[in-house]
Image (tube, rainbow, N blue to C red; front, side, top):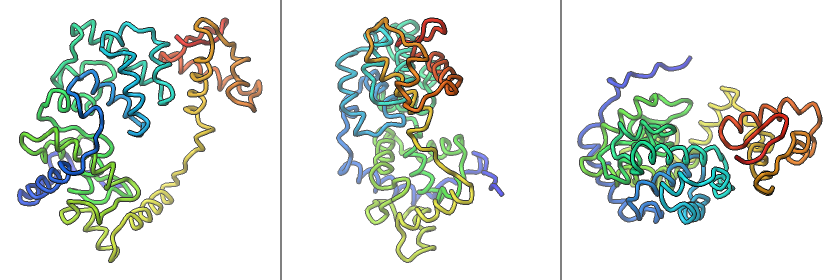
Length: 328
């Protein structure tokens, strides 16, 4: 049976002494160990917007070179707004999830048309930009404009849950709204920038999803999840957590589809193939199918039509049923 989640009003406020200690230890650790990421060397809201969209579902190591290339090609929000969409997609490849590039350009065009080319500095106005959610709005407000706001990405969610609530397996105990409420409760006065960055670094470097290195964690002695692991093993570690995750996944029947058989894989192949063609050249679906899937047969045509139609809906391709498909 699924546990009922507490309402945001019942999320326990950490004890003041515990919170003060966590603030001190984690911020001290961040001052020593922070990652030298290029978007931390700027307060340009456009550059930070680009980095945040790129970092969605993509590893930092892959983003860094593309971040520099993208800003070199489109150095301002106005440059991005005025660029051909095909050029934006081509520059984005091979980061994957190419719809992000189209969404980023749509945001740039809205900033130019509605905000005279200046990215807003408040959560309320940032959330009016189509395609920007609460996390990205909070990241821009905090990291570019140094606003005292909480923001929750995957790493921050995991760290806060483990630190103040406990293990997130077999299922999280907090909803999105409750997690954000907790993040706001534990925000250190005047230190939102460093705190949010520290939480992300801790989640990326030590408190990872599958293999947390508790022995290296600066705040393990104040961590609720560490206490739970300690109760189950004399040597709490990522091994114990991996075992708990496997048990939870087995009970839920969770299985993953091979990536090379997924729609996302073939979406990427379609965009990559179209990039190799002259700008105005189109491919019919009969030509496209065998070039992205060696085992393609006529029986796959409805699947390919759905795939290309969704790409067109997302703004990633221009698809005309009679004429074929090309980059927009």
